Image 1: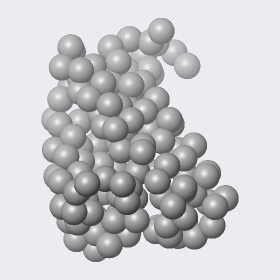
Image 2: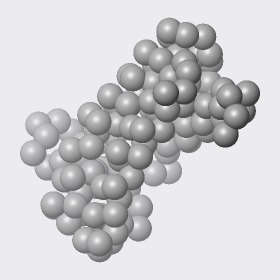
Image 3: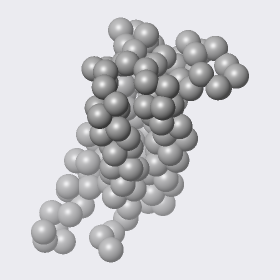
Image 4: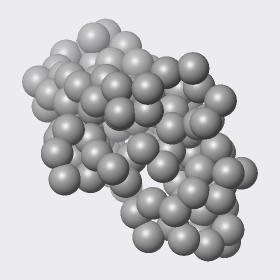
Length: 135
C-alpha cells in the first residue's frame, strides 16, 4: 500500500466505523433494544433497559464524533476513546456467552464464542483508522 493511499483508507475506515456506531446506537434506542438486553450481564446492578439506552446514546455520540473529527491529535484521542468503549462493553459479550443468552442470531455457544473474537477487531479498527501516520 502506498503512503498516499493510506490516509484515504484510514479516513474511509473512520467514516465506516462512525456510520456503524450511529446505526448500532440507533438500534439500541429503537428496533434492536430487546436484542441488546441479552448482552447486559445479569450481575450488573442496573436496569438492563437503562444500560441499553445509555450505551446507545454513547454509541451515537462516538459515531457522530468519528464523522466530525478529522484533525490530530483529537482524531487519535477519539480513536482511543472508541477503543476504550469497545473494551468497556466486552464483559457484556462475555456474559452473553457464559450465560448462554440468545440475541442477534447468536443462539449457540459456537456463535457466541465467535462473536467474542470480533471485539478485539473493533478495538484494532478504532485505533488503526484514527492514528496519524502508519507505523
